[in-house]
Length: 289
Image (cartoon, rainbow, N blue to C red; front, side, top):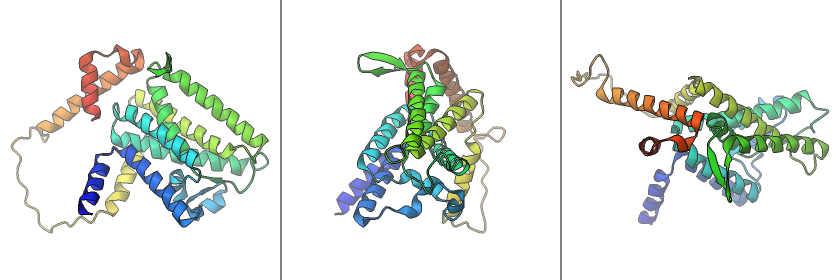
C-alpha cells in the first residue's frame, strides 16, 4: 500500500501545472458523481446580487463539469494546448492566463445576463473550464498567429483556427438566445470572455507588458498566508562573496536566458516556428522544461 501511494505521489509530482489542473477537474467530477450532488454552491450565478454571497464562484465554477463529454473535451483541449504553451512560456504565465480567462469569462456572462435580462433567460448558472481553456488557446493564436499546425493532410495557421472558433462561439450565443432550452448562450459568452482576455494578454505581452503580474502577486500573497513558515527571531547573515554589485552569477544567467527567449519568441511571432534554427529550437525546448 505504501509503495502504491508513493508511486501515485511520484506521478503527480511529475505532472506539469496544467496537467495537475486536469487531475483536479477529474477528481471533482468523480466526487460529484459519488455524492450525487450538483455542487451548486460552487456554480457561478448569472445575477450579481447572488454572486456577492459566494465570490469564490468566479473561479470555482471553472472546476465543475456535470457532463462527461463536457469534461472530456475541455480536458483534452487543455492537455494539448498546455503542451504547446509550456514549451514556450512559464508555468506562472500559464496560470495567470488560465485563471484570468476563467474570471473574465465569468464576468462577461454575469454582465450580459444582468444588463440584458430581456435577451438572456434569468437564473442561469455557469460551469466548466471552457473560458479558461479558450484564453490559453487564443493567447497562442494572437502571440504567434502565423505558426502552423497539422490538420489531417494540410497545415493551417493558428490565427485561422482562432477566428473560426470565435465565429462559432458568436453563433453559439445567438443560437442560445433563440433556443434557451437546447442552446448554451451562457457558456458561449464565457468562451468569448476568455478569448478576449487571451487576445489582449498576448497583444500587451508583444509590447513588453505582462498584464498578469498584478494577479500573480495577488495569488502569491494569498498562498503565502497559508504557508506555515516558522521564522526564527534571530538571523545570521553571511556575506556572499560570489555576488557582484548585489547580484549573483545565477541572476545574470537567468537575465541573459530570458532575453534570449524573448528574442526567439519575437522571431516566432514574426516568421513562425519553422523559421527557428535547430539550436534555437533546442534552447527553447530546454527552457520550457
